[in-house]
Amino acid sequence: MYTAAVAVPFAVTHEAAERQRILRGLGRRFRWIGWSSIVILFVTGLGNLILRLSPIHLRQLFNGEAFDANKVDGFIAVWLPWKLALVVIMIALMAFHDVTSIRAARRHEGSADTAPGSRAGSMAAAWATLIAIAVLYVSVRLVRG
Image 1 (tube, rainbow, N blue to C red):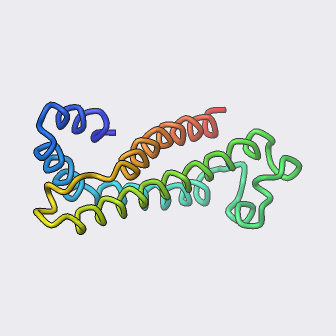
Image 2 (image 1 turned 90 degrees about the vertical axis):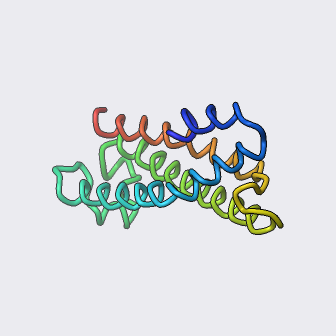
């Protein structure tokens, strides 16, 4: 969110080479925060499922009962698959963005900081950001109804 709301608008006020240097530097420096957040969210999601009073149990998630309206609350059976699918898509888009950015930087003969960006990777990052907002919405719907 920070990158989309603050870093990119700031970077576009600079020339192309400087813009790439700013965005690549920020990406390289803070990539670990994004991936660490995904791991923390995954662990806390499982923790909430196991430790909190939850209308479903972990075994129901793995045996498929959590997606069957006859076995669990119909509301959960509808929204939980959406949340899980969106999370998987978001992670795939984030990984695609990282891979394409790293490849573009390695292919560049000059400094990796001034390497041109990958248009497909940038689009993947933008979509991942939008999907993260959708994941937040679906998560709130699951908890609050």
